[in-house]
Image 1 (cartoon, rainbow, N blue to C red):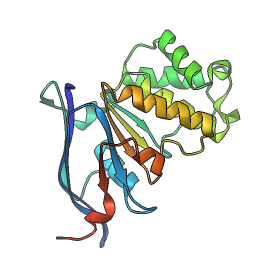
Image 2 (tube, helix red, strand yellow):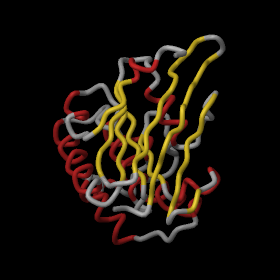
Image 3 (cartoon, rainbow, N blue to C red):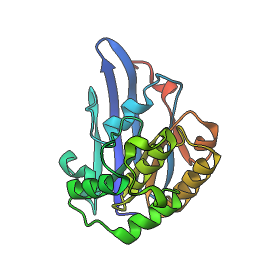
Image 4 (cartoon, helix red, strand yellow):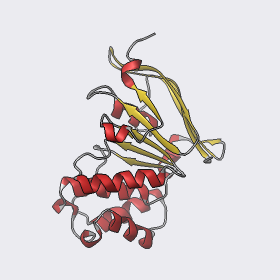
Amino acid sequence: MTNYSVSAENIRKNFGRRLIFNGINFNYSNPGVYGIAGSNGSGKSTLVKIISGINAPTAGKIIHTYNEKKLTFEHLHNHIGLVSPYLVLYDEFTAYENLNYFAKIRNVPFDKEKIDDLLNRFLLLKRKDDFVKGYSSGMKQRLKFIFALQHSPNLLILDEPVSNLDNEGKDTVYKIIENESKNTIVMVASNEENDLSLCSEIIYLENYKTTK
């Protein structure tokens, strides 16, 4: 058991008159990997943003609890690790400077030993003092994982986690997911079969396209 839980109650999202999804319910309180699946444009990233507090649902609610106490969305950033295509890194900073800056935003210590270990695992340790503007798209994706993991989140949300990664990078990500899911709730939004094969439960967004 984990001391964290996330649940959805009748989530609906519309953009104008267009229904994205409706009637989504779930309750995850045990460590493991849980999936969000759907074709391109089905609303995977939209649901991720709602779960992480970036966007609000049109109807329904997301509830995060820690030690049986409900969390306000202003405090979610201390409990959530997010990897997504829309996460912005600062190109004019080095990798180290980016990670130090994000630690200050979260008001958590900059754990150099842990950061160096993560940088090593994602094959970026030798490039930690290079400006991010010189990174390839795959290197930036790996740096996003370090950003998401550096504060030991209770909930790890991965939106298209292996995007831009080579096979070695994908293997690293799958090992990270396997390891983290032993003690953490991991949510994976993807339409990749290899990603979804890791999940014990999957929300198929195509099943939530009617007003019911």
